[in-house]
Image (tube, rainbow, N blue to C red):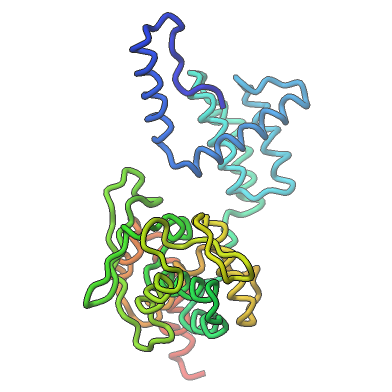
Length: 321
């Protein structure tokens, strides 16, 4: 996208420096991942327009309608909706009226939703039985010890993969009751108010997240910096670079495959969904689950809770079939 804050060329040096600061704060209004998605989506749209000799900025509403129609041939509605948001953002930045609001665009989008449906394709939840199976397959190499800590801490804390990737040693505190992990920033806390999660000791050492994390810190000799880091040399050497969110997802997929599950069914969100689903099946109430996950609304939590109680609170199971 183009420059976010337009500044006159006649600004004094002092004001030019202030404008640069404003630009930096402007960039922080949204998460880096969101900005990357906006830019990538906009570049795709601009290239599509250029190939067809159509204006991209400002774009005609009919152009956008044609664009999302072509996208619908092999893209999901959620992806199309995100591209529309990116196009709207680019227009607002340059003080143009967004073409995405036009009736022709909205009607095409409504038609796509009716024709293709809007239900997202979700990865499977790594429920407690799956977690146990995953952990059992891990060895005691540096990589195995690290992956065990990622799986157990990620599950017990219902962490997003990006949250796990961003943890540092300063974010954790061992206590008599277990482990306190402070999220400095998350998807639902972009302004950095912070959120502390309690991770209790497990009932058995093999699946205890607190013991697993302590073992990782001792084995990796980690005394400062990023918590979960890359390893090399066949899983025997520690790199200083932290894992990114995609690497966290690969850890989960690899463990699922080793445990005999289809790795394509699991991903970075499986640990978070697994805790919610397992807790719901165990009868944990909605408020308690949300206190652990940090969800701000009940929509997603109730979706997972319903799955966890499909057979526990099931009408067909109570009629004597």
